[in-house]
Amino acid sequence: MIIVLRAGATEEDVRQIEETIKGNGLTAHISRGVERTIIGAIGDERKLEPEAFEGMAVVEKVLRILAPYKLVSREFQKENTVITVNGKSVGGKALALFAGPCSVEGCDMMATIGERVASAGATFLRGGAFKPRTSPYAFQGLGEEGLKYLAEARDRTGLPVATELMDPRDIDLVARYADVIQIGARNMQNFRLLTEVGKLDKPVILKRGISATIQEWLMSAEYIASEGNQKIILCERGIRTYETATRNTFDVSAIPVVKSLSHLPVIADPSHAAGKMALVEPLAAAAIAAGADGLMIEVHQQPEKALSDGPQSLRPEAFTQMVGRLRKVAEAVGRTL
Ligand code: PEP
Ligand code: MN
Image (cartoon, rainbow, N blue to C red):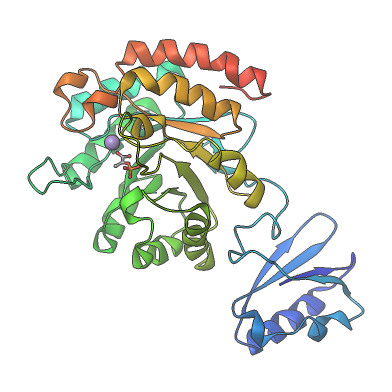
């Protein structure tokens, strides 16, 4: 439920409404705009009737949020959320560009890729230190050593770094090194993990689950937001369908659909959607044209030797050329890259 207050509402008015909400077992989320204060009553709405507030002189109107997700819905917040990390933004006019290897493989490797993608226009450096591999015998990531290499690459390039967290037991460790925490597709419905990252004051990339509907994806975002962390970046990375020509099926329609349902920024990961380097650029172009707020692209110096996801990784020179061409697509839809 959203309670819109009239201009001129006092702190005491806000406090009284907050107490009524809390007294009924719901949580109050207060957003103070330039002209108006809006209070969200989030929780089991059956416990609270709009009439509890409608009669108050200070209340302009009371609206029910119809979607099952509340804090992340467009109904709750009309303006786009813009998330800024060390001067780099996601959700504004400028597109965010997360680039880097699938896995952190070494210190020099991370620094070199970092410098190459930074000079091509990347705004964030990515790299996994904890890898969710299908096979227990495949490379699982360098763990803390990998996080250190990632942090060293951040110091050299100035790019904020994003890395995946797979297990709540590693949260302190990963949060110590990462500027942005990634929740991978396989963990989109790991509710304990979502609850834990919800308690952090750090941006979270929430990848769409392998077979998740848009509603399930937004409900997972709501888990994070309901704990207090609203710095959520949604990432469309392709879904499982009957098609086998690509690794996943890139759901381009999810981008405008989610942008209409939620105020959160949406980025696209054409690398994991395609699974093939030749398909990364057309899918990236489609994502920008469809309104994505940024991209996540895997880049590797020697894709044929990569310890994970080589077939979908671009060489740094191919990445640079692609970004040059994508700039024109961005401009055509009123964005910059
Ligand atoms: C990744 O980003 O390397 C990754 C494992 O992605 P996803 O969770 O989308 O498969
Ligand atoms: Mn990968």
